[in-house]
Each structure stands twice: as C-alpha cells, then as structure tokens.
Image (cartoon, rainbow, N blue to C red; front, side):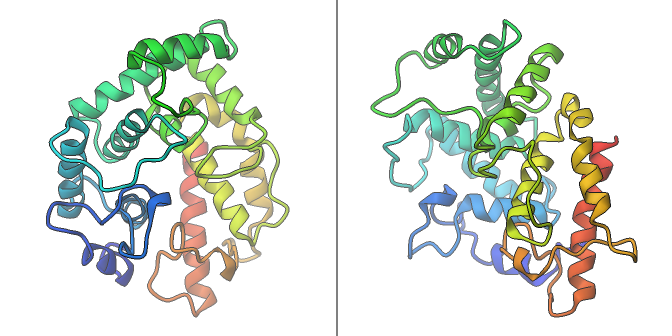
Length: 280
C-alpha cells in the first residue's frame, strides 16, 4: 500500500541504469552518494517492494554480476573484515531477501550453513570449531582482517530456513544471549526490553526481533516481546511509537507524518505484522 508513495518514488528516481544506487554498503556512504544500494533496498523492502518489481529485478541483476565477478561494488575496502568474504555475504544476503532462486547467492548461504552447523555441532557454540569451518569454507585465513562475526544482520538473515532444527535452536539461543545484540541492527541484549517504547531504540529493537522471529525456534522464546507490545497498545487498540522513530529506515511508511493518526497507522501496521509472525 506504500509502493506508490513519495518515499519509494524518490528512491527509485535515484537508481542508476545498471541497477545500483552509488556505493553499496550502508556504512560506505559518502557525499557523492545520497543513498547506498543497501539503504535503498532496505527502505524499498519496508515499503512493500518484491522481486516482482522492476527496480528490485535490476538491483538483483547488478548484485549477481558483482557476486560472480562480472562487476564490482564501488565501495572502499574495509580493513576490519576479510573484504571478499564480507562482500559476497552482503550481496548474497540482499539477493536472498528478495528471492531464493538465485544459485550464486544460494551457494554463499550453503557455505555459511556449513560453518554455523559445525560451530554448534556440540549443542553450544564452539569458537575453535567456527574457526576451522570458516577457514575450510573460504580456503585461507582472512586477508589482513578479522573474521566476520556471525551475530550480525547478514549471516542471521541469510541463514533463515537453512539450519537443521537442533542447530537453529542452539544458534537462536546464542544470539538471544549475546550482550551486544545483533551488529548493524541493535547493539544491546535482545533479552532486555528497551526502557522507552516511544524511541528509536525501541524501533531498532523491533528490527532485531523482526529478523530473529523468522526462525521457527525463536517464536516461543519471543513471547515476552509480544507481551511488551500488547502492554504498550493504546486504548484505541493501536500503537504510536512517537515522532522520534522517523529515521527514514523503518519509518515513515506513509507520505505524511504531521498527523498523529497517520503515524499511528504506520506503527500499528508494523507491530501487527510482527505479532502475526510471532504467533504463526
């Protein structure tokens, strides 16, 4: 219902002919790139765009070309990661968020499935087993950068529906117990609710819960989040997270937030969707 709004229109107008939006990674944004490809995809996904839409199809063709070496993302290499491993993970993750029918992205998902399955083979996380599996998967130690920490947006996103039930349960338990949350999404423990419901922190927290709720084994563990949301419902049966959550990422969805009614509708739409997912 938001696909024809001004937010989507402004983003699509910036898409380049080859399917990208300037730099790729959200943290690589510079003055000559008003929006990154990743920011555009995240926002369009929120606004209801799918693989059926031309702008998404163009972006996936571009990312597939980058994944196979026919093209390259323009970002400056980050020294903190093994850049090739990290880049392939980013590209494959965003392809798979829109389609599971891309063989190249699926191969990356299979690599990470093997790594995480080995790391949790004993029922709990083993860092030594993670190292062994990581090096075996990628053929060598990282090129001057640290290993990619798997408790971040990309591995958690790409592994949805890939893990066997026992591995998934151990994996979800580990993520929920991580004191610094999910990197690139929320930087505090997911087991602790935000202090204020009407805050950007709460919106980012919901982003982490939305991601983790796509794992079947997480749903029962997240009922405390559902209870928190229900407790914060207004007397009219809707939710309002306040003006501060207007971050141009999760909100707004509607064109105009000057009216509380519109903001309330957007917040309610998002939370209703999460609750349906948690109790599905």
